[in-house]
Every structure is written in C-alpha cells, then in structure tokens.
View 1 (tube, rainbow, N blue to C red):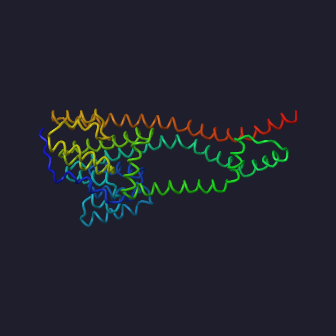
View 2: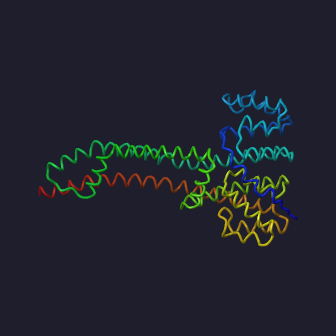
View 3: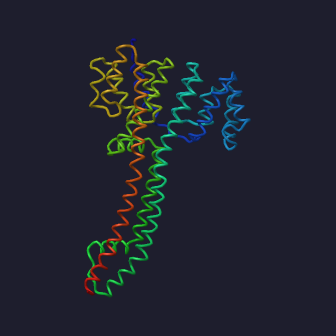
Amino acid sequence: MQIEFNKSNVNQSLLDWQMKRPKGLSKRKKIEFFKELHMGLQAGLSLKKAVDLIYRTNGIGKRNNAVLSNLIAALNKGQSFSSAYAGQVSKTPLDQWSLSLAEQTGNLKEVLIFLGNYYQAQKELTSQIQKALIYPLFVLGLSFGILYFMITMVIPMFESTFTQAGVELPALTRFVLSLANHSGSIFLVFLLVIGGIILFVFGYRNYVKVRSMAQSMFQKLPGVRSFHLAAVRSKFCQLMTLMLQSRHPFEQALNKASSACDNVLLASEVQKIQGVLIRSDMPVSSLAEKVTYFSGKMLGLIEFGIETGQIKGAFEHLAKEQYTILENQTKVLSKLLEPIMILLVASMIGIILVAMYMPIFNLTTGIS
C-alpha cells in the first residue's frame, strides 16, 4: 500500500479550531435519533421519509420536533443531509465529518451505527463517573452545611466560655476560631471558586485558547493525565477506523480525525507525524519522545501498518485497545473518587471536633 502526502493539506486540521463549539441535541437524543434513522434506512425508507417518520412519531421527544421540522425543511430545499444536519441539529465536528464522509462513500448506515455506538459509549462512561460522584457530593454538601453552622454558631459560644474560664487555647483551636471569625470571607471565596469553575467550563466549550490551555494542563496533572490521554487516544483511533473503513486516503483520514477530536494539541502532533511521512527521512516511531498523545507502541503499530499495507487493521486494533484502557481508567477513577471525598469530609469535621475538645480537656485538668 503506497501512501502519498500532499504538503498543502498538512495544515488543514489546524484551520478548524477557529470555530466555536456549538450547542445541539444532547447525547441521549443523538443516540435515539441515529438509532431510529438507521432503523428507517434499514427498512428501505428514503432518508427524507425516515426523518419525517421520526418527526411524526415524536421519536426523540416533542420538545425536539422543531429541530426535526427545520431539518426536513432544509432537506426539501435540496440541501445535503450533512449540511442540513449541521445547520439545524448540531455543528459538532465529529457529526459533521462523519455524515459528510457518509455522503462521499455511500455508507450512511454504517456511519449512523458508529455515531450511535460512540455516543452510547460516552454516555455510559459519563454515567459511571456521575454515579460515583452523587453520594460523595451529597455528603460533601451536607458536611459543608454542618461545618458552616458550627463555625458561625457553635464555635463562638465555645470561645466565650473558654475566655471566661481563663483556659489557654491550643494552637489548633485558635486557628479554627480565626476561621470562624472570617467565615464571611471564606464563604465569599467559596462562591468565587464555584464561579471560576463555571466560567472555565464555559470558556472550554466555546473558546479555542481556553481549550488549548486546559488540554495542556490535563496532560500534566497527576491522575487526570492518564484518563485524559486514554479518552483522546480512544476517540482518535475510533475515528481513524471509521475513515479507513470508508476507504478514505490515509492523509485525509488523519486530518479529519484530528479535527473531529476537537483537540488542538493532538492536531499539532498529527502534523508532526505527517511531516515525517512526507520527508521519509526517519521512522514514525522516532517521534515517541516528542509527542504525548501517541505512545511508542501506537507509533510502532502505525508504522508497521503503513509498511505492510495493513493500516486499517492497525487502527482497528488500536481502537479496541484504547477503548478498553479508557473503560478501565473510568472504573478506577469512579472507585477512587468516593473514598477520597469521604476522607476529605471526615478529616475536616475531625479537625474541628479535636480543636473544640482540646480546651475542654485542659479545662477539666485545671478543675481537677
């Protein structure tokens, strides 16, 4: 299998980062839409009739019927399905590239299966993390309420009692009392932190620079790094598998897959790989120390696939392997979050209780 590269296309993947990430159907609604559309096509319906049937049967809920109505109107005006979908449903890069690919190759049914399975897998992984967080977050919120009550109401009463008794307060108790005296400022800081997190999430979803900074940070944070790399690698390999199965040229598949991943750092690393393949002056595996999203094993398997003409099989193997790694990382993360958050809450409550009981013990000793 001879693979040729055109230098004019190397930078193509980096041009897509100027667009903002738009809003569209939720993952759950996308899964339902792709599944029902595939069923309609499988039954022999035309694309327009399948979409119209979903609309008439409220297949994705009455609230989303306006979206389907606009989609049908765009199709009736002669727009292609990918253009109509991007204009009326969602401009998510993954959906855009996949549906455009389906129109070029005529494998819309396979692409719909891929998109449905991809979003279903993402939903399941997200659900695992959410289930692991629900109980700890409830306990954390309840504990913060108890702590705030103790700091603002109970601790000042203890302070006046200890002062009247002439008990010398331990350093830990004085520290907790100082927190109580500045509880208003602490609560304000807490609100600012929550606001900062909300702004960060908004910026990550809508602005390329914020997303690039966050992705760079994710690469360096212990614990988060392994999960982030597994998620990006899994998505990229799945997209490459889809592109190659649709007989897309390898160079074009690299560009589109990296663009659909919505990760500017990954796109930059793909550009490095393309540069090596264009020059042919060194093996792809030599980039192992210069890239983050591609491990040495991944680069070696890609190089092997290019040399043997089995690049599609190489990415099929990588897609399965990376998804398994991501699934395991998610399970580990969900199992670790609950005990860590409970330990954090228990530690905070324990420190306050110890700080309050230490002067009582001193008072008891003085009376004896």
